[in-house]
Image (cartoon, rainbow, N blue to C red):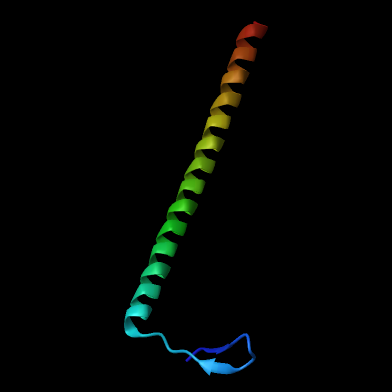
Amino acid sequence: MPIFASASGTIRAFEASEPDKAGIKKVHENFFVILFKILSLRDYLDSTRKCNLTVLVKRQAAVASWLSH
């Protein structure tokens, strides 16, 4: 049972009701789903950026090689 101190300094115990616990659990689940989606999107964008950069460097090298002939 969580214990909280009030502004007046008194300590009281607080126990969440079952509907509150279900709501809190749902909020936590939603938070982790959203966090996973954000991290997945970030990883995808990072890999896409790296891939595009590699392609760009190869194209520049090919153009430089072609121009030097």
